[in-house]
Amino acid sequence: MPRKTAKLTARRTILLVVEGETEQIYFSQVRSDRRINGVTITPRLAKHSSVHHILKTALEEYESHVYDEIWCVFDRDTIVRDGLGEEALSMLDSARQKGIHFAESYPSFEVWFYLHFAMPQSHYLSQYSLIEDLRHFVPRYGKEQAWFSCGELYRLLRPRCQTAMTNSVLLAAHNAACPSEGNSACTVHELMASVFDCTPPAASELSELT
Picture (tube, rainbow, N blue to C red):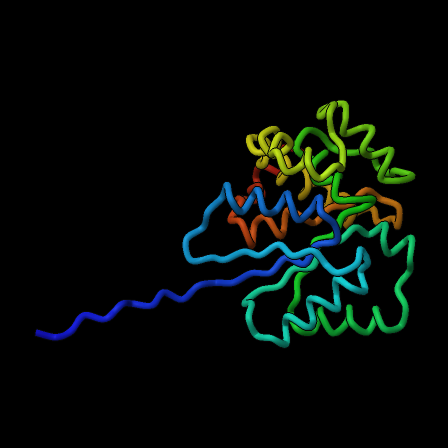
């Protein structure tokens, strides 16, 4: 009788290199909630909160050949605040050529949370004014790690994910049609669709909303 051997299942491995604890905790909670067979997702905090270090981590991990897909998650206000030196610009170009993906927010990642409830203002002077608007929907919102870790925010966001996907796509379309450096922006919906299998809105649905 032939001997049975275990069948190996290929797994897809994905790395999310994030800028801050807010993003790391959030994506860890999404991963725990949306368990996807055959996919291993690792949200990793960059060594320092800068696009330079996010790109450096992503490129090093790309060369390790451990991950099938790598995403860089960062706030564009970091670029506005710190600028991009020649080295960072070179790393950004290299990351794009290697197929590393990007999920950006402006002025901060909180715009993704806000999109679960409504469209944000067109422009914000800082992330703090955005957070003040977010508190109209999440009064206790704060960036304290203990509050995030308890999962209260994710419980509020979870049933509104499809609203966030739709609003984020609409916001991206608006920015493509009316580009401006200071526009509120978010491409997190692209990560959510690719990594967590969240369904983007259909073209017919978008046409009814625009």
